[in-house]
Length: 391
Image 1 (cartoon, one colour):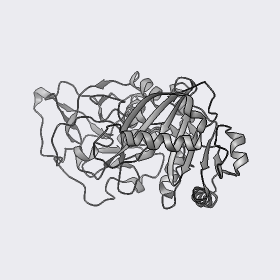
Image 2 (spheres, helix red, strand yellow):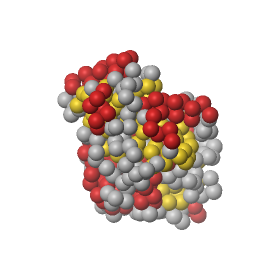
Image 3 (cartoon, rainbow, N blue to C red):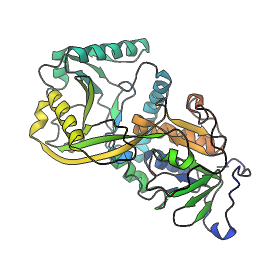
Image 4 (tube, rainbow, N blue to C red):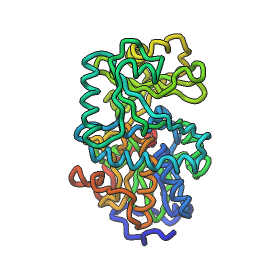
């Protein structure tokens, strides 16, 4: 495939000739599911690509539950994100098939959202109004109907919403499979321009196009308004089939989810904390998750607690991703917040289209890098070495 013809970089930064020993067509900065998916799509298109990340797949992608939930992630005032998420959901079957449906544990058995008390039911009813307004296929359920679909639910749940279009996947398996298919270099990027990257080992690598998929670290690297949003999760382990469906609950106004894997693992999450780059697992975070999930699914109280983890979601001011080519010539793919796993395939296809000068599969104008005002041009504002770069 033909790349867009190289243009002079807008940055005044120039590498020395000696640093240009490695020159792929495309360098992707960030080895989470977004960066790896984009790199794999470029590789499938016949483009020489490499991913830079000191610890690929160990950030937000490692913590994620893997809910592919465009319906249950639909909120008032975010219909532009809903359109992207629905397109992403439609792209997942082919993406999973290419990786191996069983390999990545892709399952299309729907998702149930349940309300713990009357106030929680009112919140769900409000979301149900949005679902109906947008013509989304959902089924409103009474308490008994909720428990018929998921017997593990507490007897007192007040009702719920079932969506057949919300699916699930195991993100750790997806990332592991992608890592087996694309080349990576374990370094951090310290500076980027449209066709060159400086790394923390002293190298300057040249290419025809840089793609930044650095997740929560994008703001440090390029000065765009991306903030880290911490999410703590738990992994439980019980008998296979103990929990039939992924369950999202509203419990006393707080959100909690439990996502079963085919091997009996159940992922419980997730807190939402704006604590900078702190990835500590805290007693308070674990307590809140256990309190809420056991109120909703008391039968989980006797199974093993196997793991606690925390990751950093990348959030933009409007909670929408940043996907597009910036005025600096860099292709951005970041800020996916709660939906990085869901939107990985569609983002990958969009990035590949941008790099190759084709029309992206979806309208990217709502996700433009320039929508927050003036973009940084030239050298990035912060040149410190990053401790990690993951999408």
